[in-house]
Length: 130
Image (cartoon, rainbow, N blue to C red; front, side, top):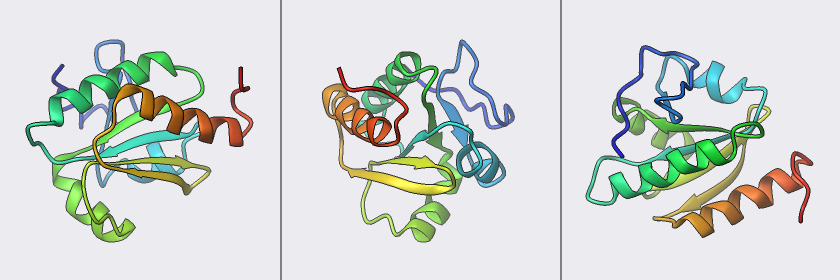
């Protein structure tokens, strides 16, 4: 499932694009100042990119209320990696209330990401453990 470049849709997920694009111009407002936690993927386009995007899009639909899901724009990855000390990609982040709350390095399947998300959302009191 390709993610279209919605870099002009600042601040928006739409039904056709559940994964928001995050770049230098909207990182602060859409990630650091978000009223909900944000799952953010830092990943350059490579052979595993499409699979990771498909999983991210599914997570965006699954966690509509408690979580926003974003993908770093390709042109912002270098600056982001330097600012946050990202050693390798893909790296998944959870940001909440202006801070990094969690980091997961490496390709991840749906089950791994669901566990990563649920752990952080439960710790934040945003979802209950079943």
